[in-house]
Length: 99
Ligand code: HEC
Image: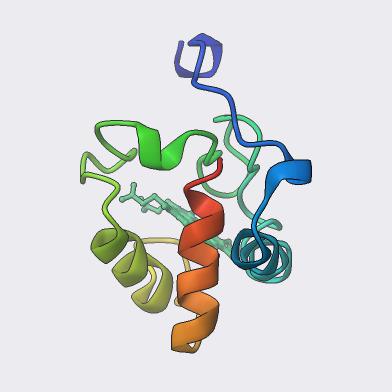
């Protein structure tokens, strides 16, 4: 079962850089209502723990920054597009790499 695999640990909040901390705020505001950051169980969308350390995302696409940017800004299937400016997007990517 996907939720039972052991995943590489997330970087603790106490060690976040300023950029990662800002990205966590973007995540709380825009993503947390649909995605758990600390496991891979489904909320409205898949849990995103270890997202960028996996070979492939649930869709099968590799979790590159380019792909994550496209999914975020344009949406995908049941996921709505989330408009972010360049600074918010790069902060969010930094945070997603800590998961
Ligand atoms: C309204 C709920 C909702 C919100 C808000 C939302 N998502 Fe999603 N997300 C989903 C759903 C549903 C899917 C599954 C889409 C599919 O594959 O059809 C998904 C899929 C994904 C995927 C997997 C893509 C893949 O290729 O498998 C990623 C990564 C993701 N979301 C990141 C984010 C991020 C980052 C944010 C915040 C900017 C966000 N989501 C906001 C519902 C949401």
